[in-house]
Image 1: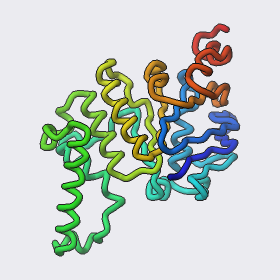
Image 2 (image 1 turned 180 degrees about the horizontal axis):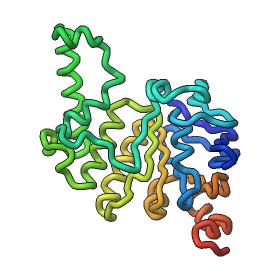
Image 3 (image 1 turned 45 degrees about the vertical axis):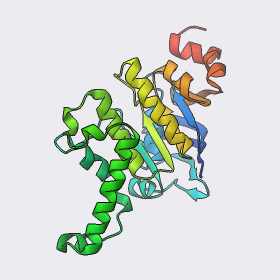
Length: 252
């Protein structure tokens, strides 16, 4: 099990400092929170971790592996997966097919074997279908396996996106506002999935505006404001921090 660590990370766009001197650690087996008001730099941090953006300064590590210069495909192969603020499913494809996409980086048979239909390709395909079905059963989605993903409710689409991310076998899972637009019941159901994934040894980073949701799930929370880390600690500690109160409410 590997921790993800950001060490004094900064990112500037021209003369604008989007993230400045941010250090944080995401530990296996638990859910770590990253919160802050709109424009705080949370999604920029996620894009830096996943190799979508290059750092201006600092270092990112996964265990002993340096990810600082790694591109997005390399970061994904090393076991860092993410969900997005906006759901990104193949709406016309079935739920099962969407989950199958998550296994892509684990496929061992080459394209040539798949094109000519070699037995090794058939065996692997059957194995991946069984694994996808097992994930759907694990998270109570078996009855939707053959449904078009786009026909599901918003909450269930979020759940499919989560299952697809888990299918990639992540060591670290970055959740970018996963319960945005959900009601409390849907959010609570998804929260149970997050807890189950964390218990399996995955390191989860939860980026979220729903403070009650963060309080319920996270052991440790980092708070960004205007690209800077202004507080960290247990949910109770950061929620009573004067700087955090000022960042959210504009008053101390």
